[in-house]
Length: 125
Image (cartoon, rainbow, N blue to C red; front, side):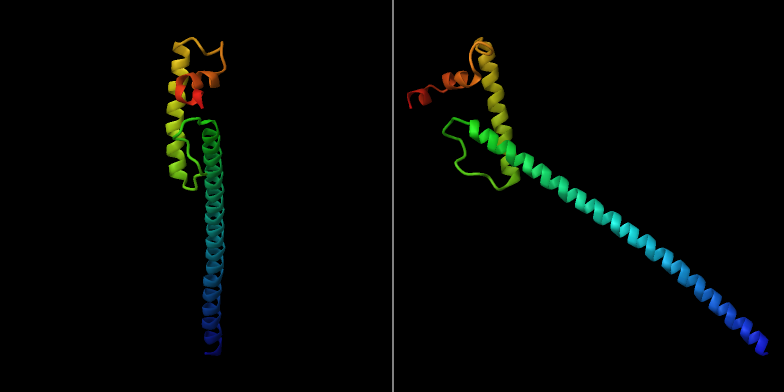
């Protein structure tokens, strides 16, 4: 009976060791998955930061070359409003270039001069 009891206990210990090994492997896999998710989140945050910096850089460049009265007076903090302004400014610049091209001004005159010609009210000021 003692020998049977030893065998049964050995079997119980072996099963517990197997479960422990499986639990260790699952823990390592879960830790790796967590690290991967954390790395992906950090990368996404970094990319978002870069996109926001690029957006605000474009916004400020557009703002600095905008000569009209409608030019924003302060720096924008909302990225979506900054993108909307950039879009509007690009459409405006496209129109300016198209008009200048039609008038034959592109290449002969600085584009900035063509913009001033388009806004005669600002020439007086």
